[in-house]
Length: 451
Image (tube, rainbow, N blue to C red; front, side):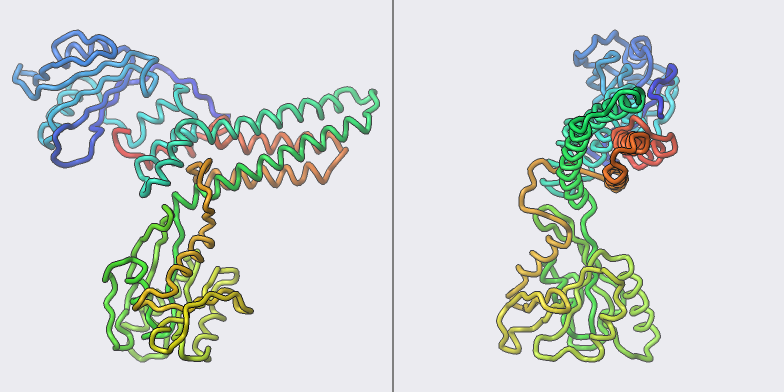
């Protein structure tokens, strides 16, 4: 179990605003008992939570910048320690001069994510809320911002804690049966245990569904566009992206390397990869492109196998389909319906989903967009969705596995209690009650400097 108690910390500093010119730049400082440090830095006594206009000077007394200084006294601060924020002019040289002055006065440069790590260690945030800070910064859509905000506000954590509380209550009931074996266990008591377990499983289903959709908003879906040359892969990429990203010509083999574009459908990032056409060729460069095509397919979350609407499925398409990874969601896209007099259409047949469309006119492309969203796991009701990460989904699935086993062992109380304990442990790892230090380093190491 990870201990969130910490010894008296040193003083860290970082530039909290992006690199480059701006009207305002922010320097953030966190440490223990910074009142005296603040006076040395600004030349005046700062009062908690009161903005003060101050001049920061170098060691020779020369003015570096006139700043707005804010002092947040522990524990009423972001990190739970004393925090000072300097709002200065946003030129890179000014920011570096202010940073250098702080270092001269005894600060050290903060590691990536160290401010938020201290907030976690000082019980200002749990681990889910801390991760939501980074997700909020990285959010690429309004829907992702809303989901990250729910996690940051503690909604995801509250739901996890509620499940843990239910498990604790059930464990108490089961372990009482173990501690007092001489007492006869009434059938009604066993039924109560099973009823509680079923309720926990039902609540898990709801939470896991919301977390999975939140992970979709965060990570998105990678889709490889594959097929023979000249079937319209690049045209379809341009149509979906709404821009001329890929070069389109009637010459077979125009696309020799991957062309990538990311689009957002209902806030879900869809990462499209236009690949080299697949055919027999003696062209060395084209063959390398095809090798990269198959490498992209191996890593993709879905594939669009593109054909021409006026042609029957031939040997080439059958060979491509046979080589696709087992279980990879694949849509057969019949392009160029405008040239062959076909109507837009979507069907589910023996091969899976087939969509007839025109990348040139846009007919039928909405059906493809709908399939991409379905494949990504998106549902129309986004309310209550949390910004979840892969580690959250893994922990939830591991907890579910132990709940399934608990149901199977039934009245074998020792095994039942152990499976409940393991499920509780997995759930608690989400919020950070049980978290190894190496995982913390990995999580916070991906944050911005200054956050």
